[in-house]
Image 1 (cartoon, rainbow, N blue to C red):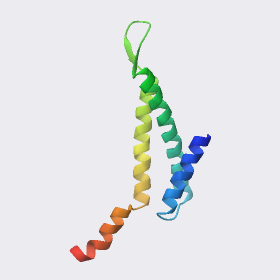
Image 2 (tube, rainbow, N blue to C red):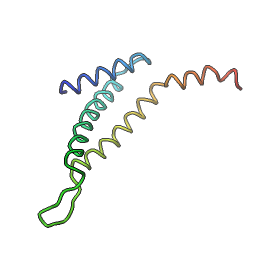
Image 3 (tube, rainbow, N blue to C red):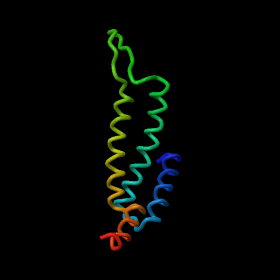
Image 4 (cartoon, helix red, strand yellow):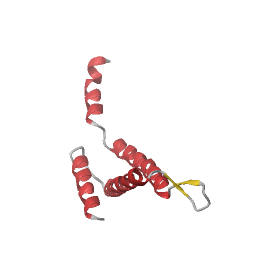
Length: 104
């Protein structure tokens, strides 16, 4: 892992450790998420600078491969965040559960 990825992983790990136990499977998901987020930032900067399309030698406009990578990364990120959120209930969910007895 690069320094930026390692730093992001440690941020995620600290955040989720406050919510509960962190298993090796969840650590693996967090490492992957950290890498995806840093790559997403880099790809987004490239797209912001160069655009989503380019003109091929044939004269046709084509989608940049970096744009496809960015879209794929965002789909993977969504899946990982969903899995992590299932493993750790959010504080809002905890408040709703605590109040369930009062409002039922």
